[in-house]
Length: 239
Image (tube, rainbow, N blue to C red):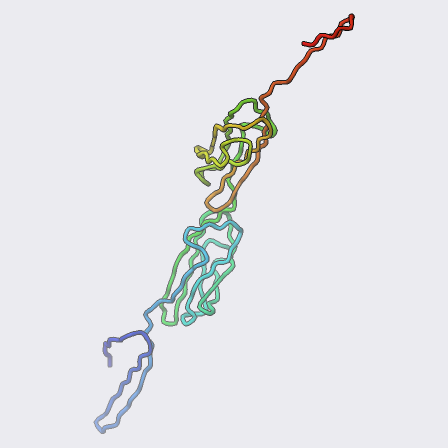
C-alpha cells in the first residue's frame, strides 16, 4: 500500500495505520517520525568576511546546533585541513595555522540527523608583512641650510594611498603626502635653526605599520670670522 500525505509543521509526527480482515480481526500499528526540513544554524563570528590576519595562526569560532550534530566540518587554506571542531553549548571553535601570506578560504559545514546541511565559506587574508617605507632624500644627521626642503622616499602603494609625517622642528607635522608609483615627496617648511626630527610612517589595511625616523640639523648661520694681525710695533689690528 502507499499514500501521499501532507505533513504540517516541524516536529514529531505519529502515523497510525491499521487493517481489518473479513473476520473483523484488526491490526493497528503506529509509526513515529520527525519532520525536520530546517538546516543547522551555523555561523562563523570571530572573523568578518575579507578580514585580515596578521599572525601565523588564529582561532576561529561561531555558533552551531547541538541538536544537529556534535561535529562542525572544516576545510580550506590552513594546515591540517580537513579537520573538525566540536559543537558544544551551541558554539564551536578551532585553532588553525596558516601558510604563506595571501588569501585564505575557510569552509565550514554541519549536517543534522535528517540530512539537512549548512555549508558556508569565509574568506580571510593573511598579511604579516609591514609596508616598505623609506626617506632617501636626506641621510641621517645631515645639515640643511635653507628654510624649506623637499623630503622624499619610497612607499608601498599596495598598503595605503598615504604616508604620514611626524616629528618636530618643521610646520608640516601630520601631513599625509600621497603614495603614488611607490614614491612620496613633500616640500616642508623648517622652524628655527637646530635639531629637526622627521618621522615617516605607513600602515597597511591589515594594521601592519612601518615607522622610520630621520634626524636633520638646520644651520643657516654663517661662521663668525675674525682676523687678528700682530705687528712688530706691538699694535694689534683686528679685521
